[in-house]
Image 1 (cartoon, protein in one colour):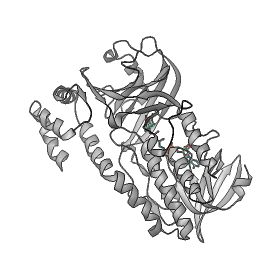
Image 2 (cartoon, rainbow, N blue to C red; image 1 turned 60 degrees about the vertical axis):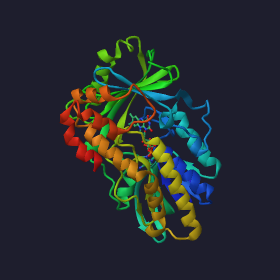
Image 3 (cartoon, rainbow, N blue to C red; image 1 turned 30 degrees about the horizontal axis):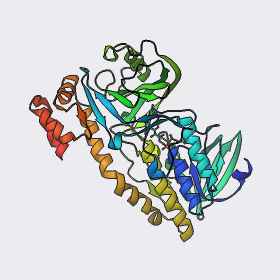
Image 4 (cartoon, protein in one colour; image 1 turned 180 degrees about the vertical axis):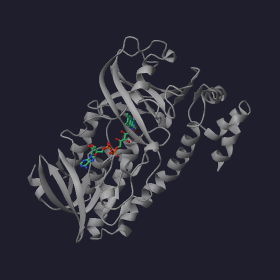
Length: 392
Ligand SMILES: Cc1cc2nc3c(=O)[nH]c(=O)nc-3n(C[C@H](O)[C@H](O)[C@H](O)COP(=O)(O)OP(=O)(O)OC[C@H]3O[C@@H](n4cnc5c(N)ncnc54)[C@H](O)[C@@H]3O)c2cc1C
């Protein structure tokens, strides 16, 4: 283990979450000598996630029984008055995984193509040097200086690595959703293949969820609210009348908490010798808070671009900009549209949410937000003030 911290690398990836493991996988596969550095003593721990991922086939990853706990066919959107909208198929299909195992699986997959991994190793500083960075890594009380041509910062929502390299990626606390979650057993689900999403005052400016997970379920919520802590809202949610006592006999087997950056992507995700990936780059759906798919996709692109740059012997911002161009081409417009929708959603009161639910069909395959709001305006003129924002 110490040995891997004494070598020089082409690519050093900080953080072995889904973003970092995918980045290191593609960097190694492309022939770059790659080190993945993770501060936790165990990859995948602690879990801060409701563990829902979309279909994995796009990543050429088999949905193995090793980590898949539930197959998901869609979700119920539940209005404050209890009206349920069923959305099935397409992008709503996927899995609830055991992230402790899933994250480790991704890291092992990366190691199999040549990535070296250092666990219980925290990046504490880095500074530019000729042809790259010198990265200071703290491992079991000892400090190591690792030389690398490229750094990929995949160090999550509390990212500090990109800042160390001079890129601005501090998140505005008002744009970070505070989440609390119990994994519980004994939950009476509406359907063992459907996720449940609850909106309204029970989870201000966010939503509460129940996701099936094998014999258990992830029951949690995210709020942007200074009045109470997320855990207080969560404890109230467990006994909320909207659940009609379905959690009466449920008991927790795990507690999880964490923040989700829902304020959209950071301005610049590339600098000389560095790329920023996943939560660290704000590559998270502002509407759902889902970030695994984006971290995996953007991580894959960053890894490919890093390997190409190493082959070319050019690690300048100009060359690495291919990463920013490619991920923006795929995701930027969607992220910005979702940001707009999220900002509107956060302003809606329970009455308006109920009216929106009222005008929606009970079963849908896709949600056309503009069409729904235009329909709802007829019943709730207070929504009119958002129409301009919506179509801008
Ligand atoms: C309660 C909750 C529920 C969620 N539910 C879902 C969901 O159901 N579906 C979904 O898609 N998304 C969900 N998310 C979001 C999702 O967890 C993240 O978007 C995703 O994990 C981002 O992956 P990442 O690789 O960018 O970062 P992370 O998974 O956060 O990985 C970052 C890694 O970097 C390591 N690290 C940090 N700093 C350093 C350092 N200095 N040195 C070394 N290592 C370091 C960390 O230990 C961590 O392992 C949820 C988030 C929360 C908080």
